Each structure stands twice: as structure tokens, then as C-alpha cells.
Image (cartoon, rainbow, N blue to C red):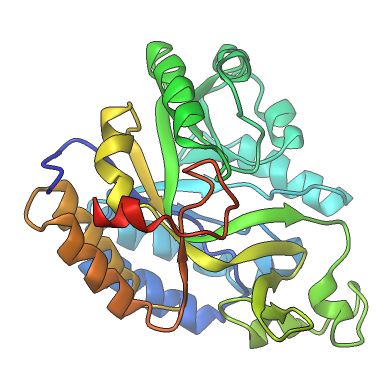
Length: 309
């Protein structure tokens, strides 16, 4: 069944991998020209050492996306430990435009009670926390990926009652943890301070396998991710009915304009869910899908009954 909802916003989360400056420029040019997303998050959220490689392109990228009718939001780092990271977070927090998405407590402190969005790295797990965040100036909250359907519905109802936008990640690898150490560098015999940016060799994350040689996780610098892509396309109607106002797609090493097109077609009622989900599988050939967190089971699992329904 198609969703037939013209008001839900489709968003594109920030690139979390260390893509080259040229690759980023080409990516956002295509997003501006071809992807039917309403809002785009920009900025470095994982490793502050990567930021200088693409910061110079931000003004041009913002201008091109806004010219294409997209709303741009700048995201802060998820982990702030160093003086330069505090300064970068404070500089973003001081901006009046574009909108700011805060992903750490340092950003909340620096932003004060001026309007801001709360990102998925903050622990917005329940309605009491969301109410506190709203009192601190939050206008929008992206819920953590591991919340099950019931908790999302309760959180969404509370947030919408306070006038907040509510966002849920519906596509892409789940962020499972961030660490003070960089396993990506360590796995190649390097230190975090002398990593030589080895993470650029893994534009969709570095695969980890079990001793039985089964894929299990991905490593992206200091971040640990799921091996599978979250796919909540079959659950879109339930999310929208429950009060979720924004659906987030995370950039992966696939045709993201095509991914966005499939989600938009379902939201607009132009394509049936089953057909769109089959198209999504074709675009992501070779990568497993999961929706376990949403259904209250192990996150890596895929509940086939949901996809069939």
C-alpha cells in the first residue's frame, strides 16, 4: 500500500565517512540536481581531523543546495574532547543561519537556549528528556536509531505536543557507538594522532567479520556501525501515522538520489511499498537490510513479515 503523505519531510543526514573533497562536491551536486529530499545536513560529525579537507567547500555547497530548494542544516561533532573541537563546536553554535543540529552536550552548552535541532547522538530516549530539551531551545529532535516502534510513537507524540519536529533514520547503517580511540587506525598499525587518514580507503566503512568469517560490523574512524543498512521503507506508513515528521536517509556508497526517489515515491503515493522496497534492494545489491531495533529485537535482524505487509 502506498503512503500518500505529501507533508512528511525527507532528509539527508551528514556524510559520516572520510570521502575526498572531489567526491563530496560531486555527491552534493547530484543531490542538489536530482534527489527529492527536502533538507540536507552538512558538516563533520565523526572526526575533527577530517574537517579541513572539506570545510572550504561548505559555502558553495550550501549555496547550491539552497538554490535547488533544499533546507540546509549544519551538524556538530558527536564527540568533543580537544580544545580545537570545543572551538569548532562553539563557532557553529554561534551561527544564526543555517540551522544547527547539536550532537553533543558541549554544543548544547555553547548554543544556550537559542533555537537548534537535537541530533541522533544525543540521548533523546523518552518524553521527559525531550521536554527538557525543548525547554533549552530545541525545535526538532532526531531520535536514536535503537528505539522500538512503541517508544518512537510515545516520543513523537510528546515532541509534537511541544511543537517539535521529529526525525527517525529510515535508511543507512546504524551508528552503534563512538569511542575516544580510533580502531580504524589501530587495525592498520597506526595511532589516532598518526592515522594518515586510512579511513579514506573505506568509503562505506571498514568491514569486520567474526571468527567464522561472517560479516558483523563496520568501523568508521572512532565510530562503530551496523554491517546492514537500516531499511524502514515498509514501516514508513506507521512512522508517519505515529507523528514522525522527518525521515532521514544516511549517505552510503550507493545511488542516494535513487534511494531518495524511492522513498519519495512511496510518500507521495506514486509507488507501492513492495515495489519500492524491491527497487531499494536492487540499488543496494550485496548489502543486507535490517529493521530489528524498530521491532524490539536484535538490531541486525530483518523482520520479513513487516516487509511483506
